[in-house]
Length: 434
Image (cartoon, rainbow, N blue to C red; front, side):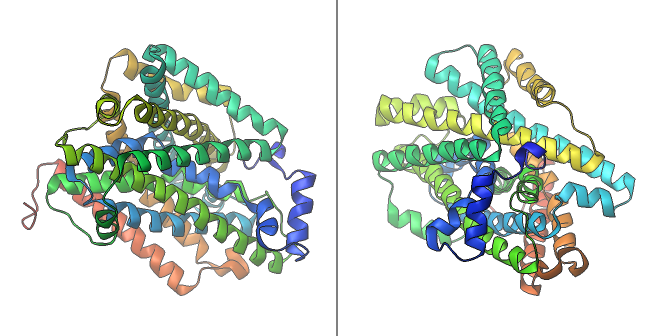
């Protein structure tokens, strides 16, 4: 998955990439062979965990937390472009570099926490798809979990035909989610003046808003996909020299901007749809996906509710597949071995099946999982900054000082927010917040 022999470039893609690198193709035609890794990574930014936190934020606080989505998305662009650059510059992924340069005890510790993050992510994605099947087709949750496992395994098997079919399928699902939310935007008729204003003007009115803001960041910038993106680019198009590395990286940056902008717009639309439909009509306690679906039906009609669930299914299936890919890269990189995809698929299904069997509220679990992910997030971000600022590792693609500064600021912000989160969860209060 990104590092296997089956994931080496197909001759057609490699030939097209070589033509672009030789400047025989320009514009969109030159970009096409390089489009894929960022869209695969972008799936993690629009997974079911985002649905849970965005819907809860929009219904409770209206448009006021849209700025958090914008900030998180800008952070995501920077972090994912650095991860992609690492794979291009070194031919290795972030976990592999950690294993090579850090003491074994540190690598094992990072691996354990990364696996917890990957499993927490997979839990959210699995639950989202299972819930979508339950609400849309009335399939029992336990049966839905098994169907989700089989469906994501089939998606992953596309990798046997080369990386391109898998990339194209995931890109198609991302575009489907985008189309669904374009339809939701038309149907929900948000106040675009409010959307623009609150996308740029920060607001944190109380402790609940802080908790949700951290949840939104935790649901947006995902630890496992920081590791994965470097694995997707490390051997995809192999550069022959430093000049080719620079050219491939330029294409990669453009792709990251396109893919993350689309993911950001989808996240914004999730929140402003909830603000327009739920908060504006007095439904300020829509804190789970099931309630959102049931409330959407009378407010906007069954078609809008069905579109919402179709997007949730596409999100759940695609992000669950990407989560498994990330798990493989994490294990192979940190400890040097992999397990069969079907074994990882079965193991990561177990927490979801247990939660479903115990009848635990799925959306509450989604929100909690995103908060846990935000606590793990500083680890891959800090290690990514450490490696990308080293010229002996990155060569000509070493970070500029401004890049390292901006990434360090993001890492510091994440740490501060996580400390604030722990303080609030333990019962602390913030004097300037009502």
